[in-house]
Image (cartoon, rainbow, N blue to C red; front, side, top):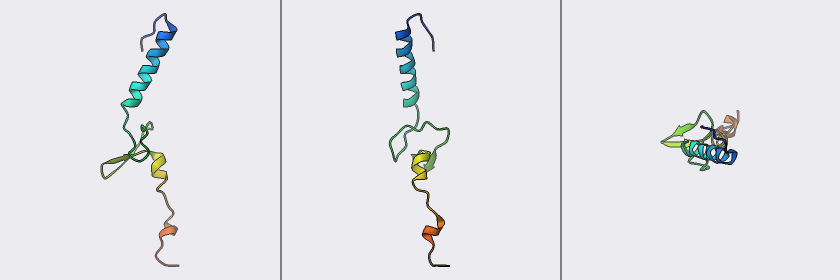
Length: 68
């Protein structure tokens, strides 16, 4: 970013750069938020953030077919 001698203009330019960066990121198909982490999950062409994927994590014990 190019800085000027006008702090208000610099702040506006910085904010605009941040908004452009955010808009360039992919969006999670579950929560609708931009995925800002380094990693994301893709399942059947849909994109998911780590937080949403954590919501789908379950214990294997919850899905056992019969008591051991």
